[in-house]
Image (cartoon, rainbow, N blue to C red; front, top):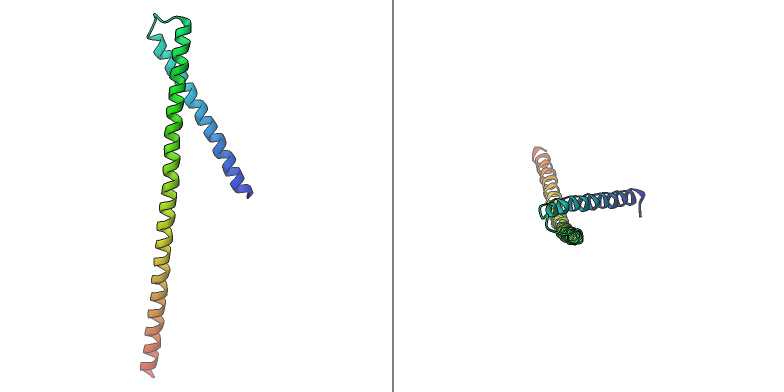
Length: 113
């Protein structure tokens, strides 16, 4: 692997880790706030509710990120295909234009002789 690709991959992994850690912390804060609204829970019940709440949020986050990543891969494929077709058209138009200009110049040269 090239150093630039390795660096980009490493940075993406670090970014993913930091985003996941931040999401887990947010889920914990939200879980604490949720259980604080339920004063009748025992400490054990409160911990269970918080644990389940955090696990549910983390799983939902993973599912969402997986869907987003899958869609990004699909879009990359679509855009790559579109770019390839556009590039082919541009090359074809350029070749046709150059051919037309050269043919016109040749015809004008022959007519002017």
